[in-house]
Structures are given as C-alpha cells and as structure tokens.
Length: 132
Image (cartoon, rainbow, N blue to C red):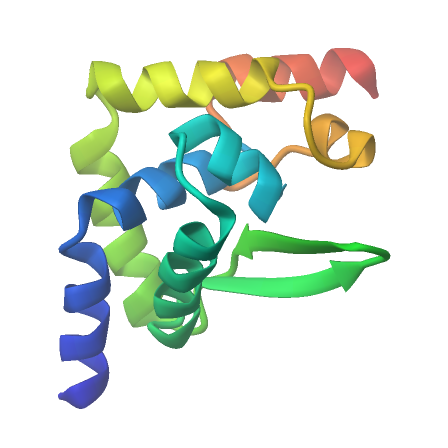
C-alpha cells in the first residue's frame, strides 16, 4: 500500500503531471523540461526524483546530459499513467506544452529526433515514420 500512496502523491501535483505530459512526447533532459515549464532546473530535478521514486520515469546519463524518459516499472504504474494520460488528453494547456517542447532548441539535438512509440500521438508517429 505504501507504493500506491507514493504513486498517487506523485500524481497529485500539477507540475509533475505537466512533466509526465512532456515526457510522453519524447525523452528529455532537465534543461528542456525547465525551459518548457519556465522553472529552475533544481525544481524540475526535485519533481523528477519524486516521479522516479514512484516508478514512473527513469534517467540515464548521456555525456553531460541526464536524460529522463517514461519508464513505468510495473503494470500498476503503467495503468496509472494510462489513466493520467487519458484524463489529460483533451487539456489545451497540456497540448500547448507539448507543442512548445517540439519547438524548443535547447538540450541535446539527438533527443529532438527521438519519439516515444508508446505515448506518441498520431502526429508524432507520422513524423517519426516520415523521418525514418
């Protein structure tokens, strides 16, 4: 039950929901997420740590960049993320953030070509297919 409480607490914060929405577009570094949301990098890192502790995201280092991606650690985390994305799918503010992320020119260029196949909407899948 402690794990479920930790997960629900992680999902109860608007900033963390926005971070998850951005990570549904593609993996991102902290500087991209900070630029998209307009927050300081330490604030973003703190929220990402809570999402990681809850089992929703993972991070790996690529050179100077710490890259975060959606990585539900089990079926429960996957179901909670699916419910969250379903609830956010028609939110205009969330769609605005996703569009802003697609236009950002910060962070490592290799990330802007990557797309999350599980979370990408039809527009992103079409773009990925056309580029590949």
